[in-house]
Image (tube, rainbow, N blue to C red):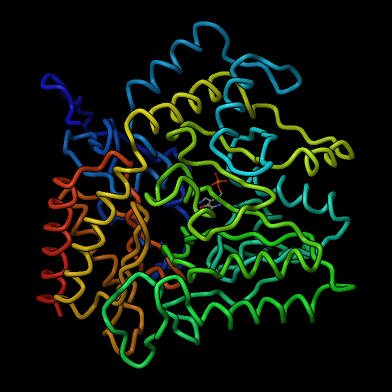
Length: 466
Ligand code: PMP
């Protein structure tokens, strides 16, 4: 949907942002945390588009940070917020109100099995903090396991769960968290190119067939190893994973990995937590939830980002039995589940159904991935294209054989170039060399064509600079 004809983004020249404490101002590793050299001041948004303060339009291929699920300022979601604001903005979750009831009912209708109890938070970090607490209370065990390339949140507590060194600063990171080898089809020691057919990977090609990747068994053996060596009395409280690792650079777990991992964890008495902060709400196209793409049903699901289309909210959903153990703990947050958030979340669920968003993700995502695959054959520095639906990663390397990451300054130049041509892309991965494409789920094929042309030009400019 294009903006209405009379849509005239206003402009603001000469703004002074020097008083804003922003992540840009931190002195971070430039290879990983390069920001646009010429910063963009975002001023206005409409669906998949953004305008800067000078009125320049961008296609937003990163949707905030995978937050704007159904489109910037989506009119239906905006109306729901406005209507609710006329009635009631806030009650803490001491009280119940009709919107939280309506929202919880709608949300659990989207989830399988006995995942029937919802606790609404303000963010993904809060949701994961609570999920870990629930698992510990339920099992009476402290130790938890996550994957080495994971990101699950930014609280000091979760920095221990998050394994990526990029996000772990000088804070204590013990807290009973253990990390198992990342089942990374591109960089892992056993290869195991995900089962989506893809160009041959010299030297590390996996001979897996669709749905049966042998490499997953080796990664599950590694998990077994962690459980055997590191769990006191062989007991574990929880295992947490995303089906496709978001911050880690859209690393797609090999088919069947989570099924076997869940079996191992349950055999050691633990609960399985699916982090759906990025993968949920139809983004993968093939399924509403990431865990469904792996054929598993978790014990606890956490979510945030897209559930509020950018409005700050998160949630934990679990079974009545696990939720009951929370009776042991006074767990509380002031803003979580406020009426406006619930009205927004509820409208987002409706829009996803009404606009057939999941099917759009499948269709436009497949189109995008195919186009990127062909771009990969044109450019030596595109090492890997991966993902599902509108959760796509492009890993940039020095060359396809060595797979050495493209140096940060070169990645940054390509990235800057795409921005200058009107396309905003995310960046991430272990080496900061992955372009992350996770746009609002209303992206069209015309937007894909435009973005592809821009990316091709930026890659050509890069070749010419070398
Ligand atoms: N889990 C995942 C998978 C995430 O990507 C993030 C945020 N990038 C979080 C949890 C934490 O969410 P928040 O930033 O809302 O606390």
